[in-house]
Amino acid sequence: MAYSDDTSGPFGRRVTRRQVLKGALAVGAAAGLGPVISACGGDGGGGEGAGGASPTSGGNPKKGGVLRSGIVGGSAKDTLDPHVAINEPENANGFQLYNRLIEYTPDQKLENVLAESVESNADATVWTVRLKPDIVYSDGKPVTADDVVFSFNRIIDPDAPKGGASALAMLTPSGIRKVDDRTVQFTLETPNAVFPEALAYRENTIVRQDIDVKNPVGTGPFKVKSFAPGEQTVYVPNENYFGEGPYVDELQIIQFADPTARVNALLSGVIDHCDQVASGQLAAVQGTDGYAIWETRSGGWIPFTMRIDQKPFDDVRVRQAFRLIADRQQMVDQAFAGYGWVGNDMYAPYDTGYPSDLPQREQDLDQAKSLLKQAGYDGLSVELVTSTAVGNGGVEAAQVFAEQAKGAGVTVAVNKVDPGVFYGEDYLKWTFAMDFWGTRNYLPQTTVGTLPTAPYNETHWENAEWLAIVEEAFRTPDDGRRNELVAQASKIEHEEGGLIVWSFNQLLDAHSEKLQGLVHDVASMTAMGFRYRLCHFA
Image 1 (cartoon, rainbow, N blue to C red):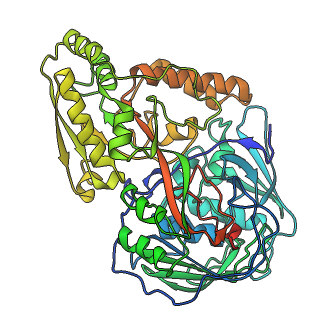
Image 2 (cartoon, rainbow, N blue to C red):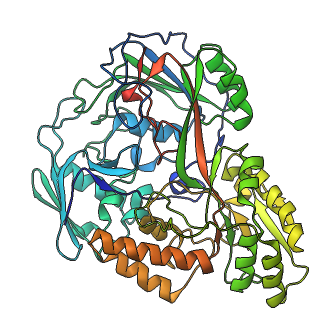
């Protein structure tokens, strides 16, 4: 089977749970002091939209100007190595400097980028990738099959696996072979009909064999002008870039440890864009002339996790009762100030196999009480472990749920712990806790979060019927049949699993209205997804 530029899908990864954090980052997980900010202005040439999904404007954008973006801070240990990126600044750098064979469009479709074609054999065990001709690095040297082989060997190195290795568990070094200067063949140990999603995983970028992370050379839209870890990175356009943009003369990505300082910098004209605006800061932006909120419905989620191998959650009736305790809209309203969308205890809402026809689960305290009584748990008391590490609103959501649980006769003691404790040695041991995940399609998410072999199976989920369906789905090249299997597996988790998926994230950026060309990126950690190459000034 072949993957063309209009094939749908998304995927996942990881290094230490709180680092390669499953494709998304906790909001405000920053370190270090405030950044040194350049005084360069952001007013650029005129023009309109830069393409992409749902841009702020359309037309023929003119070039010019300095774009300054304020993002969640990193640390002095930040790197320009795309294969070990673990925080927001490092991921932002990766998007500017490098490309993957296949990438996601803003609206969650797969498209060939460095690859001209990606095709598999009949049983999806052998995938052949043909590179596009004439794509070169920023120094003018061509991208070759040797670079692809080197990149993937570096990622899955058994002695030092990188963050993207978890998405490539079915691939070994012996399975990567150069066919000719533009062709690489991947032979998998087990069939994987969605292998292109692993190729599109954000850390599985293509780097040159002589990679120098202090002086990076990539195929992306920008080149590094200067790099101050924990403070800012300054870029200039890559004149050899093969895609659309960039339109600005310079890009400055500036790090802020404090979210309020980030918004203040925007409203005072120091920066042109800032990401991850907290709901409490929206009024300040919306009440200031010349500034606007950029809002995107993400597939990211903050679930409650119930260990199905420990009491009381080893009884499916208890798990069902806890799902019926949740008033999801109230949690969204109170924890997210209404900026979220209600979940139905299933992840991967952008997967084409997602069973959206299932009725929305609503709060039913009487039925919850009945199920708990049947399970022998009248007057149940549990501890719910949470942390600011799971993202904005996570702790507040736990507190709202605890109040709701009283209506079912359940006492929930919310235990807020430090991020280092939450994702420390007891991570994966909590009986009842929270977590966060980024946008992925269903099958890739199972490989990191729900398969028995998944590295982050927080609920210790194990179900023979479900596993047989998922394994068949991985072996099924036909999209329609695979979607049916995904729906079947999702419904089993909906009824019997250990996750309470009560909401999906609403991503909020803020920007000067002079800044145009923003797109809605549903699979990113920011509302516009670091797609600065499409931005320009009105």
